[in-house]
Picture 1 (cartoon, helix red, strand yellow):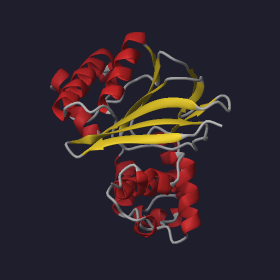
Picture 2: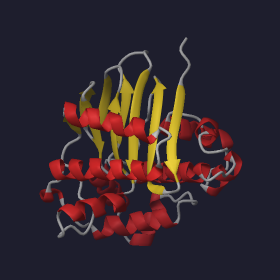
Picture 3: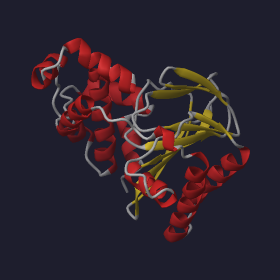
Length: 269
């Protein structure tokens, strides 16, 4: 049986990105990131879902995941799938977008979930391999910038400028500030003077998740950040509001498709 692996590239001189390289047939639970993400398969066809849509992701295709898009990508078979996934801070992406169109104020979503573009696929694969190489960090940064200036120049669509929902934004801001807590939907209803079912519909319409599922993803995303910075698994779980280690391990593995221990080992020297 072929051994599975997960390699992560992160450098403090390039704080706006994280690159994942993995071979796995573990199934991801639907989840989201605060980042903008771009991914490819090197082998094996997979099923990629983004919100309510499902796609077959083959070689020469790129999966596009906008911030807060609820998604998963899983192999169609038990064969190990080799893939790259790059996660980028939206503020950095917005600055690239603004260099293309100065009127842009906030990050603009890309209006497609999947791209069938062999040239871009090949360039993206070269970029990922270059990031994992021993090349000079400034050369890596140049290559990243060149690629994403080209990418956003090709696929940026101003019609996708986000609409504002004050109620949703206020609740999300509150949850981000209080990610350690286990906040019930009833508490949110009282805090924001909104009907429970209205809040649920609001979240489903905006990000296709319940408030509870959103909070769980917030906790796991924060846990990833802490593990990257050398926190122990026990301290990470407690810091993120998990008082049951098995509950933390189970949910982390479902969303990240690797255990907290395996994930942490990529960052501990």
